[in-house]
Image (cartoon, rainbow, N blue to C red; front, side, top):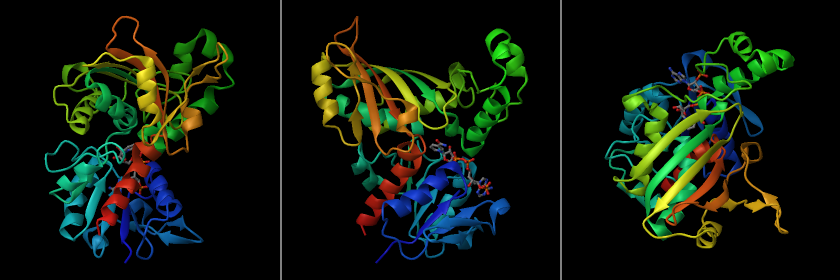
Length: 352
Ligand SMILES: NC(=O)c1ccc[n+]([C@@H]2O[C@H](COP(=O)([O-])OP(=O)(O)OC[C@H]3O[C@@H](n4cnc5c(N)ncnc54)[C@H](OP(=O)(O)O)[C@@H]3O)[C@@H](O)[C@H]2O)c1
């Protein structure tokens, strides 16, 4: 018996990857999946295998007969429709932040805490935020080995983290400014003023924005609070001390995170490298190019379109024998969103 799947937000950046993953991974589907989006997209067609599937506007009837509903259409839509989908018998795997911190909703990274899936009392499973997800794949095995106590994490987040609109805004601004080297070099403020940002608060092309999401408590952004709250929940470390800074960079897809991790146990680089080498879903790319070592470190560009999370620049902290510094990179649309959601759907489907 296959599983009937609906994708809510099927036309979006994450939805597109969900559709691809369902096909690529040979998910055990019952018939064709149901593709749902807003009224704007109703009636349009999306490719599916050798044919096409008509997009429907999301509505209660759309969930009839659906076993698993993958939600990726923003928090408001999840709050409105996920309970309806559950009531109609579906398990919801939600990509938005709507339910992530609810006690009866597990927050799950498939390689990190799959056992938490058993605690889904509400019929909803939450997919972590893309930055948290990527970081957790590298942090969890180190935490298991050495006992994490503190983390200073600075993200370098792709424009695609803000959806299809973020990707388009970056590419349009690059096209507009790329021929204007003089202004970019010597009058950046007028170059910045020449574009009209919508997805981001300032020009994203040729720029770095110390602002992801919206500012909330204590002058941190909601994106930074997600990193703190979700890491604590996933690692089951409510007392984890964390200093987050989320930064948007002009990359299409692929989030990087520079992290200083402090552990209860002293930790040296060799021991950490042994742990990271055996971690599921993680690839170590770490070499200085000196003393016969090949030069290797992860980049968002090389990680775009890849399932794995990559870690490199693993260094002993210069001051503290309990701390390590490293750089983690992952595709925010794949492991950071769609791939993990489909991996969770596979785990749910395997339960029967
Ligand atoms: N981008 C990432 O890296 C990332 C990572 C993790 C989680 N997420 C989360 O995933 C969700 C989607 O993100 P995205 O990046 O894919 O955004 P996106 O590219 O802007 O896509 C948004 C999707 O939501 C649909 N939608 C919007 N309003 C709707 C409505 N009223 N009713 C039904 N569907 C509606 C859109 O359909 P139309 O085309 O019809 O407007 C589209 O399919 C968000 O909750 C986001 O926080 C994103």
